[in-house]
Amino acid sequence: MITGVGSYLPKNKFSNESLSNFVDTSDEWISKRSGIKNRHFVEDNENTSDMAFFAANKALENAQISKNDIDLIVLATTTPDNTFPSTATLVQKKLEINAVSFDIQAVCAGFIFALSVAKSMMIEGMYKNCLVIGADAMSKLLDWKDRSTSVLFGDGAGAIILQKFENIESKYDDWGILSNIIHSDGQFYNLLKTTGGVSTSQKVGFIEMEGKEVFKHAIDKLSTSLDEALKNSNKNIDELDWLVPHQANQRIILAVADKMKIDVSKVISTVKDHGNTSAASIPLALDNAIASNKILNGNLIGLHAIGGGLSWGASIIRIGTPKIL
Ligand code: ACO
Image 1 (cartoon, protein in one colour):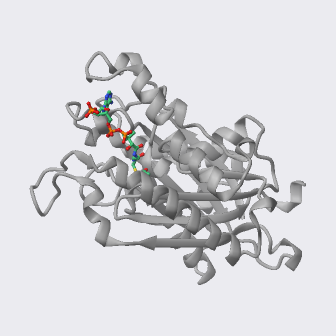
Image 2: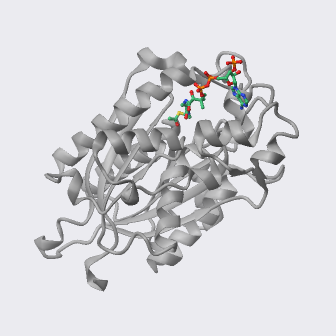
Image 3: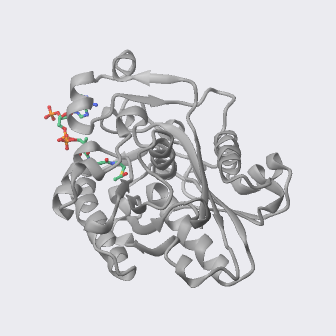
């Protein structure tokens, strides 16, 4: 079951206007093309592990469990503190706990992939309390001379606590992650990537993207994966209380809502406030919607995301725990 959610945004906030002081752009262009108004960037001494640590602590607090109960940390990121070891092990160190910890990398789809991996490991039976984190400092991959990408991204982190309760009644089967579907297709590798990497240039590189192509794939693949996840959980779109999409672009969010025939009032959108935070975007939006009393304990929620790879996927979750209903 999903017993706690937490998130973190760096203090440094940049509006479209402030960005236009060093990028050849305007509030009008960014707002119209993406719906983004603000994004947050880490400070020089603030790293992905710091954001992940803050989000993890909030999730632990909200789940009301001790950090010592966590036995697994799965952290999705594209912007690790170091090339190795994993950022997850650094979060584990900062939390001062013992837990199997590792990173996974599926760019903007990272959180859905992390959920899938964590769920499988918990079903296998070895782990009971898992911290699933999405954290990215995308500002470190931005080329300020490329206005078509640098205006779209932001930094942040989000986390959830997954707990396995044994010997509970079967009527509680309909809680937690009901289904999870993930896909990847490397034939689209070049549509969204960095200009370098450890084994090619020994530099992390900058983001480059074929925006129009990514836009089309996003609408198609976000819709089909949500459909698949709904079928796998024997639910239909009308049963969803909320859809929490990857927060990349308001136009993509609206186009998918239209295609899936889900009322936009049921779609959580926070992209305006933090831009595309990659692996952090879904748990950030989830936490935001819980804090503003939109998402309530027991709500049925669809999640879906797409990113470089291309990698994409969707989950159907029932959030919270039956005991406090
Ligand atoms: N400010 C001002 N003008 C700009 C900017 C900017 N920041 N960026 C591009 N332009 C100009 C271009 O130079 C071009 O000018 P021209 O007509 O004189 O040549 C004009 O705006 C139109 O550019 P396009 O690239 O055609 O703009 P488009 O309508 O395709 O919008 C965008 C670009 C927003 C990137 C769009 O393609 C998109 O949303 N793609 C989806 C990508 C996305 O969200 N990716 C996130 C990561 S993947 C994921 O998470 C889904």
